[in-house]
Image 1 (cartoon, helix red, strand yellow):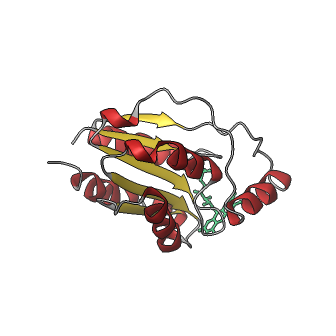
Image 2 (tube, rainbow, N blue to C red; image 1 turned 90 degrees about the horizontal axis):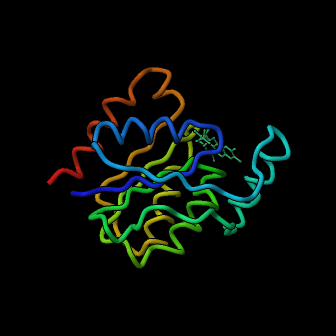
Length: 157
Ligand SMILES: Cc1cc2nc3c(=O)[nH]c(=O)nc-3n(C[C@H](O)[C@H](O)[C@H](O)COP(=O)(O)O)c2cc1C
């Protein structure tokens, strides 16, 4: 399958995981840039969480890669208050008609993956080929390379 990884990352964890998946699958990726300021340990954190809980959309920078040219679009997001981020919600809203098939991955402290994947499935109107949830402890215990390998395997055909 020709796959495109599409991700948002506020503090770099999801970006690192995306890079590992990209190497494993030998596929391209696109980083979604949220034009809203989300940095900051307190204000940025609170505003981000509020926007995710309210299922807010945002304004994202123009994308560079055309999702309809890929067999699968694999969407990656950090979990915010057991939800996808506004940047990924916006990307899905704007592009879902172009998706042939989808996969989802997330990074998180440890909670909210099932809820997040369920709402991504609803929004995409497609059941994912596969999903991957990476918690902080997976990275600490170096469990993520095996998880990434298993996930990537599902998109080989
Ligand atoms: C506003 C906010 C809300 C969060 N809510 C959750 C949550 O509900 N469950 C969880 O496990 N982690 C939560 N986290 C932790 C992030 O999902 C985790 O640190 C993630 O790996 C960050 O990815 P990034 O470095 O790519 O931005 C939250 C982080 C932020 C900033």
